[in-house]
Image (cartoon, rainbow over all chains, first blue to last red; front, side):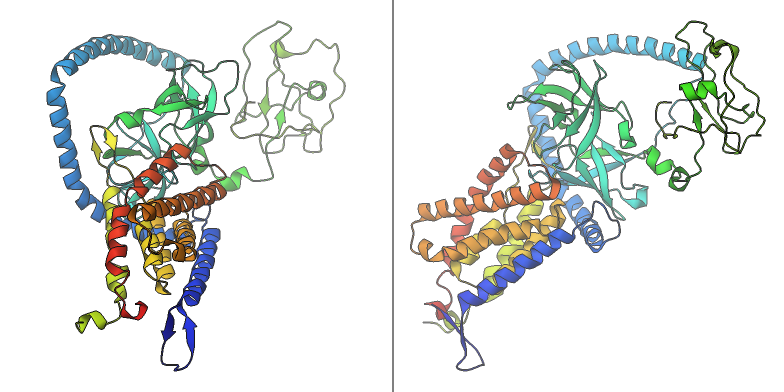
Length: 382
Length: 171
C-alpha cells in the first residue's frame, strides 16, 4: 500500500484512507446541498443566485458556440430537401389544398364567432405580448429536460411565462437572469401541465418523465381520448393560457396514453416567450385572504325562508332568465360588503319567487344578512 | 531515467485538464443541434474522470474535483444542486473500493467494469431524481444515456494508460 511521506517525518498515513475520508466528506457535502436546494419554492436563495450567475455566463458562450451548429444543421436541411424535393413537392401541394379549405372554414367561423361575441357582449382576451429568443443550450438527459434561451429580464421575461415554438408549447420559464431564461420543458420529470382533449373536452394532466412523449394522467370518463386526438392546454390553474397546441395523443408501449409533442417537429433554435400573467399573479392576495368576505345567498331552504335584503345598485347581482317552470332556480346573489339596513325588504324577482303561500319571518343578523352565508370561492362556479 | 520522469505527478495534468475537457465536451453536446431531425445523445462525460482517477491512484483531491464537476453539471443542466456530484461520487467510491480487482485486467474487461460503474452511477441518479421529484424518470432515456456514456471508455482507457504508472512514488 502506498504511504504518504510528508514533513511530519515518521507520521505515515495510508493514502487510500485519506482518499476515503475525503470521499465521505464530499458525499456529506453533496447530500447537504441536495437537501438545501429549494429553488422551486423559495426565490432569492443562494442556489438560485448561483444558477442565475451560471446562466448569465453560459448564455453568451452557448450563443457563440451554437452558431456553427446552426449553419451545419441548415446545411443538412438543404441537402435533405434537395434529395427529397420531388416527394416534398407533392406533399406540399396536397397540404396547400387542404390549407386553403381550412382557411375558408376558419374565416367563416371567425366572422361568426366575432358576431356572436358582439351579441353576447363577451369580454375577449387581450392580445398577449411575446418575446422571441434563441435557444443556446438544450439539456436532453432523462433526469432534467431544460433549455436556456438568450432573453432575460432585459427583455421583460419573468418566471412563469409560457414558452412556445412555431408549432406548440414547449414549457415555461422557471429561472431568469439578466440575459437568459431557463425553460423547463413539458418532458421534464417535474413538469405537470393541465391539458384538454380537443375532441371530447376532457381534462387531463400532462406528466413529463424525461422521455420524448409525456404521459396523460388523471383522465376521466369512458374513452375520453383516442389515437390522433389533438391535445391543447386547458388553461386550468392559470399557468398556461387555454387553447395552445400541445400535440397529438398516441398509445405508448406501456399501454398508457402519451402525447407526441408538436414542438418536436419544429426547429429547436427559436422560441417565443409569452408574457402571460395568470390569475394568481394578477389577483390581490391580501384582498383574497381578507376575512370579511361577502356573503352569498343561495337557494337553500334556509335562504328561501329568509329573503335577501334589497340589493344596492352597485351590488354584483346575477339576474336569472325569466322562467316560470318548476325547475327555475332563484338567483344567486353576492351581497355587497357594506352592511344592509336591518329593515330590508325582500327583493326576489317575481319569476323566481317560491310557491310557498307565506314565508316564515326572516332570520337575519344585526347587519341584515342571513345567518348562514355561503363562503365565496374565487373563480368557482356560483 | 530522465530528471522529468522522477518528478511527482502534477494534479493539473491528470485531473485539471481532463476535467476541463469533459466539461467542454458536455457544453458542446448541449448545444441545440439536430442532424436530419435527430437530436444528439447526451452522455455524462465526467464519468470518464470519475472512473479513471480512481483506477490511476487514490487521491484526496479527486473526490473534491468530482464534487465540483458535479456541481457544474447540476448548474448547467438545471438539476438539483448536488445530485450529479453525489451520483458520481458513488461511482468513484465503488471504483476505489474495487481497484485491486481491476488492476492488470485486459482492456475489454476494464470496459465491462467501466460499464458497470456507469450503470451504478446512473442508477444512483435515477434514485436521487425520484426522491427529489417524487416521480421516476423515463427508463428508456436512462438506458440511452447509459449506452452513450459506456461508449466513451476509450477516452478513459487513454487517461488510465497515460497516468497509471506516471508517478514514481507508486511504482
